[in-house]
Image (tube, rainbow, N blue to C red; front, side, top):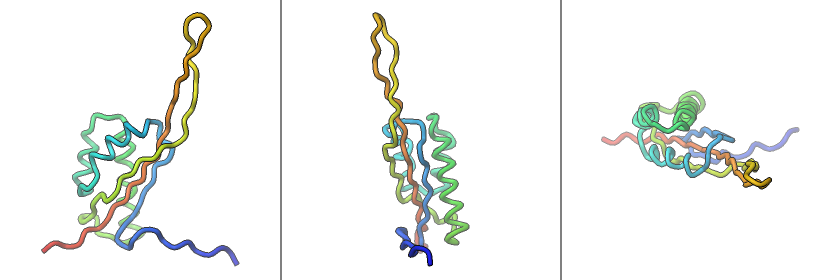
Length: 126
């Protein structure tokens, strides 16, 4: 019997990859995501390869995963793919304390974040 299939929330010319619980703040991750929004995937990959930010390596892996999903699952042309959306969300926050003078403690927050990349195949522009 089983449950009913959920309808696909992406169009036929789109593919998605999600990165959960990445150990950086959403604010820092959004700076990297902002740099690749709207770019062709080849340009975005080279942008991430030469980025000086630590998290760019994980974003690059996620973009390569989205490209592979587009190619293998949806039979899309890799050369016409564009980064349509790059959304960053807030994940859990680990709360810790750091010891201070006179027996006191100050709170530390160690945030996690989530990244969703959607690549879309562009139409041929003649």
